[in-house]
Length: 418
Length: 162
Figure (cartoon, rainbow over the protein chains, first blue to last red):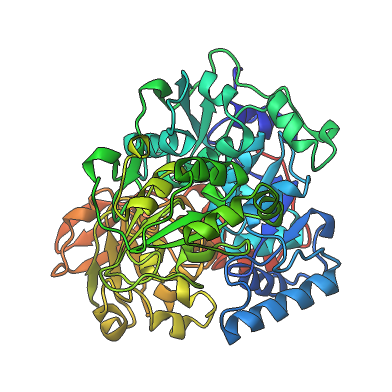
């Protein structure tokens, strides 16, 4: 029987013929917990009569949403998680390493063909290296911590095919936002998005992370790019690539539940307009929108390559005095690359706040919140009402290039025109 | 019983904003439910109330705080045209039945809902609206009262069996 990448991953893991629609309990290769949803997962683990976790080596624990602790309750949650890690022999990356999804991939514990879960909806990011990875709730994670497995409904897949070469200052973020706009916020619900074609083959791993990260914004259970030599080279920095299944690709004639096709050469910069991620327009439709804050960072666009893209647009100019520019790399590794590459100096001299790796304003939980009637332009993944602070504020989403161009002018600006 | 009607794409940030995620107590979470988007909810919602949503209810973040906040507010049932995947699982896991009703958008806050879920429908002010059955595998978790209760009876899990 012909299979999608998703069906192949589950079939190989289970040693039997698995197809979309099957419901089964499947062991996981890694599980990620962070400071927001982790404490409840630990409580559920104990309520399920858990004593020792299934395998401390397979658990990736860190704190990223509220770091350094921004309240006493956050500090107490961190204390509780540290104690749990120590008792269970789990390595805790604590507040030092950065955002869960970037750090998880940098552990080298996630390889192509793996099945990975995390208590965060953007866990779908790990499809960038050919893993099937999906976000789950805290009770699900309590079950995983205890048993090392979880129930899954094997999803149908949709095929996102992109060919061609991006024009200057247009990139993976524009492609995935365009896709979400077309597919809709629930168009891929209970489905995996499998990203294929020349544009994805040419795309480096950071761009693939951006695309897979936002699969959830069209309801997707996972986003996956077939692994290749680029994947192998990137992962070999972090772990033993012999453990990965680099041959994963869909069978000829595999059944897909839907298909969208793009020539990325035709693509122009995209912006997601408040208050839904699928409310996507070409940048010219919102050009001139007044901004109060610009955020460059997050698990979607907080990598060195994203800051280079923004810095290239910035050139020798300064950011507008009318906007607050907050830049936050996704991990310590990315932070150090920015430091050594001169990005931090450039951004700080241009007027940005360059913060240590964490989720920052993305979730509206820690710092960098917006107030009543303020407008934020952000390279992150969600523009829901109130997502970055006041429910009377507005959040627009864009690429690092568009964010940098707009931070220079103080209004939403086409990065090809600055 | 009061019906709280919502539209499409109600996200979990709206149900419980990110700044309250250090809280785990259901009642305290309930006091911030829909804060800033529907402030009267936390004041007026009471035991036995029902939420009716449109498409893609509970989209966005995986925060289990969302169904916990709704339970804490006394919400008995969430009915929607469709649910986002993680929210749907979180409801099942926390013993809170999400009801898929393709005609949910026709329900108004003035209606009276009498559920007949075993028979697969809602009586909505005398009209019969079909509900979709919970997948068989999940009904075991629902019957147990949630994933915690389901898991407590197990010492190990058999995997990879269709």
